[in-house]
Image (cartoon, rainbow, N blue to C red; front, top):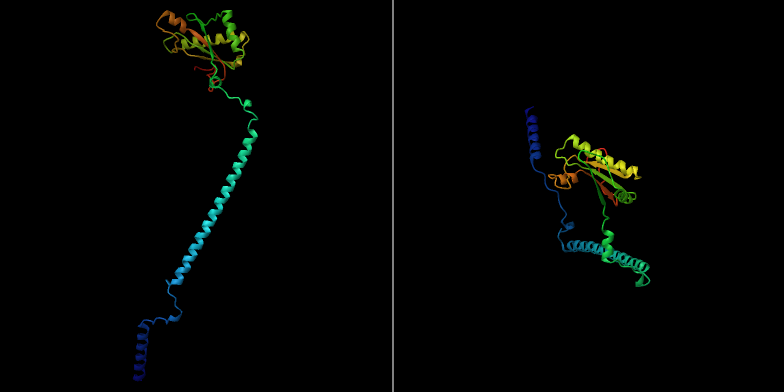
Length: 230
């Protein structure tokens, strides 16, 4: 009974030894191998690259040809347009002189009239000739701005009230004379914006005023409305 056991142990040892041995590499048929850098492979790759570059050059040449044709067509169309608008004779061309260009570009000037007031008063007393001159321009003007001013030196409520009352009094006078009230804007300022030296009686008399500015054209930014100060 001991002999078979020994034989089995020996067979198992042989099998384990066979499993631990590294496998043999597979056999390769050397007759079918081709070198990666052989001369004909390099030539083939070079031909493929040259063919790709040739296709790119051909596409670029076609694009340039299309652009040249489009440019030529556009030049022909422009030349035809020039022929259509060209005057029949030099006498029909009017060239503006520099003086006329300056006259067109120069903005129209506004007209400013001044109404004087007694100290602490908002009573309006306009001479007929003065009123007629104002109305002659104001009737066709797009905008008339009235600015009430005082000879005050402090920004107090009393000065603001008298400045506002003076502007409103002049507006009422112009509206009563026939001027459209929708084209009149009034502003007022209690102090500052003096037209003369406010340290002398004569300067103070000139500062107690309402300026009537008659606009020749509407300004870009409209002056303040009657509901507030400028």
